[in-house]
Every structure is written in structure tokens, then in C-alpha cells.
Image (tube, rainbow, N blue to C red; front, side, top):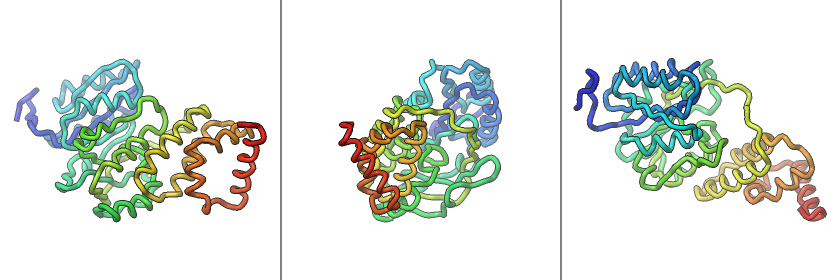
Amino acid sequence: MDNILGMDICSHIRLSIILPVYNAEKYLYSCLSAISRVKNKDIEILLIDDGSTDKSGTICDEFSNKDARFRVFHKNNGGVSSARNFALAMAKGEWVTFVDADDEPTEYIITFHPKQDIDLVCFNWQYTTGEKEDESLVDGIYINRGKIDFLNRHLVDFVFRTPWAKLFRRNVIVDNNILFNENCFLGEDNLFVLDFLYRCGHIETNHKLGYIYLRPSQSKYHLSLSYSMSYMTLFMEKYLKLNVDCKALLQLLDYYYFYMVGDNSAKAKIKWEQCKGIKDIRKICSNNYSLKCRAKILFYNLLSYVYGE
């Protein structure tokens, strides 16, 4: 062990906690305090100050000066994916977990030691209010057919559209060059998780609480139609590689990414139906749509031929 600032630091880092920070001074102190109370010496906390203009950078430095496990990097603003990718390049841990600056990981996830043959551990989560959204996970290990069956049921859960409440084996990320898409500003988490699920072997689920999530305010995003169409095509490319069958997720994203465009015109709907990713969803989910919904899909597809869209 090395001794830095009066604290023993393990030469072997078990866990890298990656925490991108941007103008988060309102919540950041609480988040970092929760992590610092866990006294394990085999962890590192990578704080990536992504060009904050408030006091976030100063708060990061304060924790780093008190606790050598906190490593602070100040960089120009590049977005959350850029910050996470920067941290992945700096990480030394055998395992990686991601935390948002306005949330808190529990002591349990920070101190948990996965079994040797596990690549991904998923934990339960809840809102700061104590409410839960996903079906609760139970203790289990999934591989091969069992992994597919598990994802068929749970891939629609919110936790699989985020990188938090999980432990990722870092060498799976490094060996397969799995990164966050820096061209995406919404949905990049989902793409990262899909890439990891495709490459990982054993998945473990744990019934314990691993993450406390601040319920976000109403979405500030307004997506262009072209962004939503490009995203859905990219998403489907990754989804199809998994060879899973989670129609509920496909229908949810179909609705969400068109809704976020905010354009309910016939022209927008015609273009949406011609998107490759949406066509893939239509083929997979054809028997799940109501008669009314199928009639609308057929109608807008016919209009595309009439108007040459």
C-alpha cells in the first residue's frame, strides 16, 4: 500500500467509481459525502469536471484534497459521454460503476465483491422518495439461454437504459473498446449497456438496493426528427445483435422518441414510418399492435407512396 495524505491506498484498485460533473453544486456535496463515508481503501473515485461554471470544480478539489481516493480531472465541456469516456481511459479498477452527480450509490454496491466468473452485476434502485419503478430484481446468475430469457423479461426495465446501479467488469469494456457515443445527447446510456450486454458472459442480479436516483424534472429535451430516426436505427442495430425478444422495450422507445420530436403532423409520421429502425420494430412487433394502430401504420405507409416520401 502507498500512503498519501495520511491514508493508505491499495496498489490494487477493485472498483473505479466514475462520476461526471457539470454545474452540479446543488447536489454534488451530498453525493460525494455519501461515497466518502465508505472507508474501503481499494476504490477510486474519478471526478470529471466537464467545464463547470459554478462551484462544482471547487467542491471536487475539496474532496480530493481530503481523501486521496478522489481523483479530479478538469476538462473543457464535451458532454456526459465525453466525460465518461475520459474517465474510462483513466480508470484502474477491476470493476467500474457509474454515478450521476445528483444521485447516490449505496454502501452495498461500493463494497460488493462479485464472483470470479461474473461480468455484470445489477442491483435494485429507488427514487430519493423511496418509490420504485422497475420490477424488483432477485438474486440470480444468468448465462447463455438463461441470460436471453432474463433479458427478454427485464430489458424493458429502466435500469437497463442507464449505466448506474451496476458493476461492469472493466476488461470487457477495454478489450471490446466499448465507449459512450459522443454524438448522442439522449439515449447514449442505453447504447452503451446494449454493447456491454452483447459482449459479456455471466450476469448476476442482486436483490439489495444499490442506487438512489433523484427523480428528474420534466425532460428538457426536444429532439429533431432526424436525430430520433438516426438514434432508432442505431439502437436497432445493437438490439438485433443480442438476439432477444423484448417487444415492450421496442414499443416504448418507438413511442418515446417520436413523442420527444413534438411534431404530430402527417409529414412527420410518414417519415417516421420510413425510418429503417422503425421498420425493423414494425416487423418484430406486428402482432402486438392493436387493429387501430396497424391501420394507422398502413395509412402513413400508403401516404409515403402517394407523396413520394
